[in-house]
Amino acid sequence: MKAFLSLLLAEFKDLARDRAGLFWLFAFPTLFILLFGSAFSGSEDVEFDLGVVVKEPSAAAQRLLYGLSQVPVLTLYRGDEEEELAALRDGKRDGVLIIPEDLADRLRARERVEFPLYVDASQLTGREVLASVMQEVLAEAEGRFIGTERLFVLVEEPVQARRFRPIDYMLPGVLAMTLMQLGLFGVAAPLLSMRERKVLRRLWAAPMRRSTFAGAQIAQRVIIALLQATLILTIGHTVFSVPILGEWAVLAGLLLLGALTFVSLGYLLASLARSQESGTAFLQAINFPMMFLSGIFWPVDWMPGFLKPVVWALPLTYLGDALRQTMVRATPLVPLWVDLAVLGGWLVVTAGLAVRFFRWE
Image (cartoon, rainbow, N blue to C red; front, side):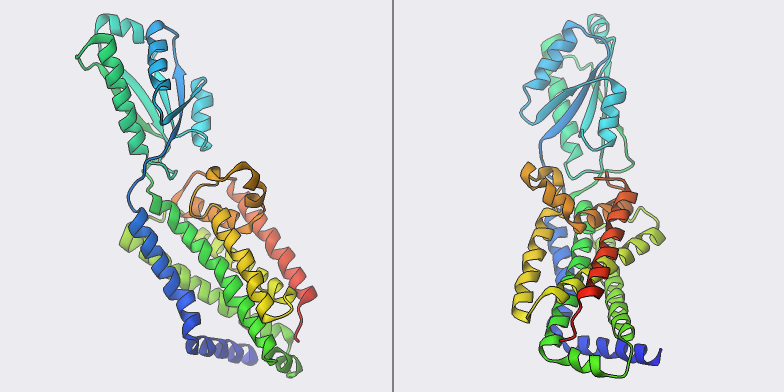
């Protein structure tokens, strides 16, 4: 235990002397979240997939449907209420509009007509823009049907409790990116440098257990990961008012799992690289695809179809999805248990391969 604590303290002292390392571990994610928060703390305008449920077919309903189909930002899907609401909860619709069954009768009687609009506020797209578009469409249709008298009323029915902003999507993504880069550049890069400088060879010859050395290094990285997460969550919550809706214990366990998964991946990459130069190129070749293809900064639905297999093969995809589900209750890509199972699988496989192929010199 004394050797473990001595090594752990030595790792932190070495980190304290490495100003560049401190910048990439703490200052860079801080600047990153401040930059993204400033840019994306508002809302943005995108296209919408709108489910439409016609309770009773009529000429008036058909005319309204035709008007909706002429709106450029809307893609319409017809179905019954149960199917469309299920699609909304699964993240396949941005909203569901209900055209009431008594539309024609109310128009003839010149009575108020309510159009329920179910919205899912947990996605990146601007739900307030969808409501605004629908108000304009109904106002235009109302003018064509009955003149200037306002009888059409849009009634929003939020499926979830709050509206999400882009920063609510971005914050878990930045946290996931930070854990990933800790494994790549906070584990693999230092190990490659230590091997190049023959430090690992001297440690291999030292009278101590290999598990003590590995345990001290892993413990230091996990502590750094928790410090990074605390910093990012504090900035997101206090500066940009991003709520943490999930259980803190679940979030802590997920952060621990994510940190261990990418630390193990870092050890594996350090084991496979032949030199520091080739290892650096290797790390960059893995870093950029994971950053930009894993859906941590924008929805995976925006990716072209030929990239989808790559998206689903990346562990960062599942960590980002799990963090969004846990932190802000976002619509999931897959159930949380699938995210945990995939990350656990990556942890077991990469740790086993790292033990098998790790070289001290």
